[in-house]
Length: 260
Ligand code: NAP
Image 1 (spheres, rainbow, N blue to C red):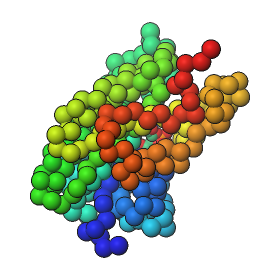
Image 2: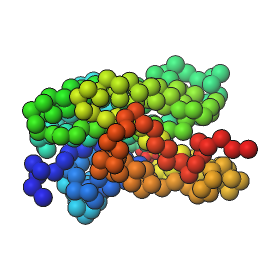
Image 3: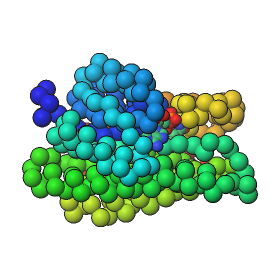
Image 4: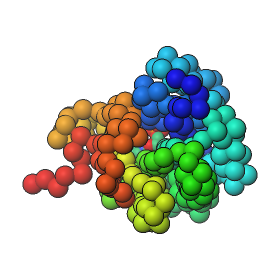
């Protein structure tokens, strides 16, 4: 496929875990993928190799999404590589450095987590949306989309990582706001809400989650894999939901169901 014909996606935090699986799933559909990472260049390079092996093409771009100048450069370099931006996937995120009871949580931890998980994605989306509006008006792209990777923590209280829960609850409203604002420009916005997924982020709590899953936490009694999330994003990106926007797709083995 010629480069200009390939649709181009920017996936933040694509060096590892869920972001990598999203990048590879998109590549399997022929996408060009801007693989963003913060500090792990080697892992980002591995993602690029997997993207190419899957049939896509890609470029690795370092940027801290918490920083305004980095966000601006990230978009500029994405456009320099691919000449278009059809899809933004706001995936990069962090857990608090320490799980601490919310009665002891520091303002520094609150600020850091909110900057990476909510403020950064909000302003990256604002800038990307402006670009998409212009590219669509120019006829360069047809059906731009934005996918936010939220979390079951948007509605599940974890009192030892309150800042994370707040950031993901905020992302739920961010999805609604951008879906509302961007519909008139033909830009649909979705949120994919993972449950418990086997990545570096959850590795510290592995034995605890093993136990909870064995005890029946989720109707589908297994760990989620990054590829489960990748598939959901790829289905959205393929245009499976053209008359839906602001929609939340739970990829959680059914954890969100209220059960008696
Ligand atoms: P992960 O394995 O810890 O990977 C995090 C990714 O985000 C890495 O690629 C990392 O880059 C990147 N990143 C972190 N901070 C960044 C920053 N400031 N700027 C740019 N990139 C940054 O995490 P994951 O489990 O795949 O999670 C991905 C997303 O899914 C997050 O938003 C997370 O909150 C959400 N989520 C995860 C789960 C789960 O169970 N794992 C459940 C629900 C939601 P480097 O490699 O350079 O560090």
